[in-house]
Length: 172
Image 1: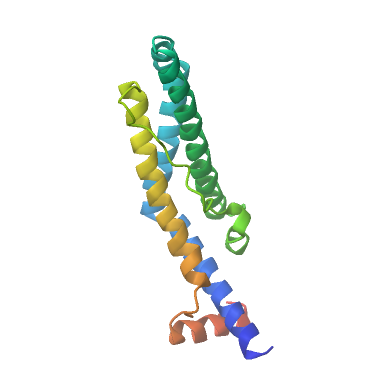
Image 2 (image 1 turned 180 degrees about the vertical axis):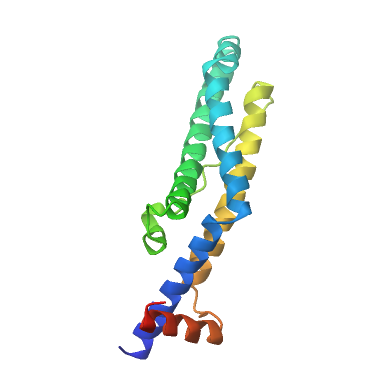
């Protein structure tokens, strides 16, 4: 194997270790719990109080409500999918190196909201939008730290590189 191939292999092992470590962390536990609770809360709101509130809106506000609720659910589904991949790594159902595949990463295109324009949205929806954006931003930050930074020109610490190569060579 040439030097570039060895470096790529080491970076791949290093990245898989980062993914595995995150999946087993308290930060993951907290983020997963928060994400899934927000998904449930949002579904309950949109099917209950939000549905009633949207019926009282004028036409323009109702259109804004519909667009924002779609953005909200899309954003939360992206976060939930990402978190479920990390949980699959934790449970041993997915190899950490497979979780590094681009198809399991958060979209580069953030699902941004236009809420707040004119203050026409119900407070419940505006609150969920704000909280979902903060969660998305945090998960996007984690995604970039775990994956994009590993794709940069920097290789892991030289000692870590040597250690990982030894692990790979001796199956440990």
